[in-house]
Image (tube, rainbow, N blue to C red; front, side, top):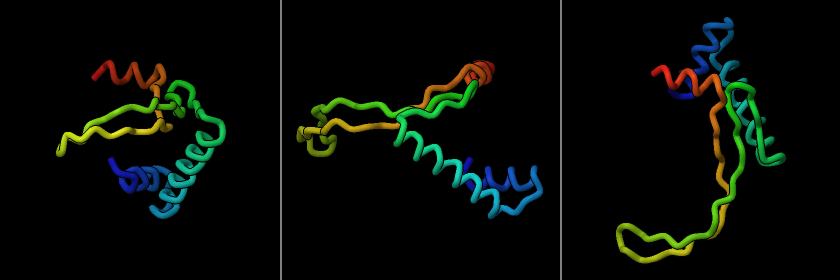
Length: 92
C-alpha cells in the first residue's frame, strides 16, 4: 500500500478530498519524525513503538569488489509492534 492509497481510503471514509487526507497523513508522519528526533521514542498503545537505536561502528565488505569498508556508528529508526498488532499478525 502506498500513501496515496491510504489517503484515498481515508478520504472515502470521512468524506473529504484526497488532498486533505494526504495533508493529514503527511502531518502525522512529520509529527512522528520530529518527536522521535527530539525525544527518541514515540509510543502508540497497542500498536507499537518507534524509537531510535544506535548501531555500532563496524567493518563491512563491498560485495562487488570485496574491498573492506569501515562504517561509522549511526542512528536507525526501529519499530516494535504492540500486542494488538502481534495478535493480528499471528492469525495470518
